[in-house]
Image (tube, rainbow, N blue to C red):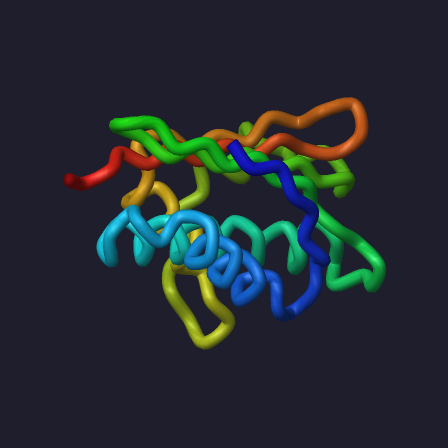
Amino acid sequence: MIKCSLKADKFIQTSFRNLLLKEFSDLGDTNLFNIALATGEALQNIVRYGYNFLEGMSVEMILVQTEETFVVEILDTAPPCPTESFMQQHFTPSDHGGMGLGIIKKLTQTFEITPLIKGNRTKLIFALER
């Protein structure tokens, strides 16, 4: 298990990918790619929509690898996410994005966002390919 904090800025996807490659290089290329892509999309959504690109924000992360799964838990301090509408939306890809949620849902075994009193808990569970 690894606990860490990442600066919530435009480089958050790269920061996470570098952490993943450094700490979990034994997962194999396909697993690393899927985890980095889906988690990167979730992190980018937090930066873009939760924090509205505010400077000085961060997210706390817990990463847990088991024999069969890889779990990413992200804690943010953004306003609570309206999950009843957000999680049910289907976006049409455009020049402005819209593919992130679909990618996350496709690559994860489980994806959930839980609003907290202050912030949100995002949990992604990946089934590992062996």
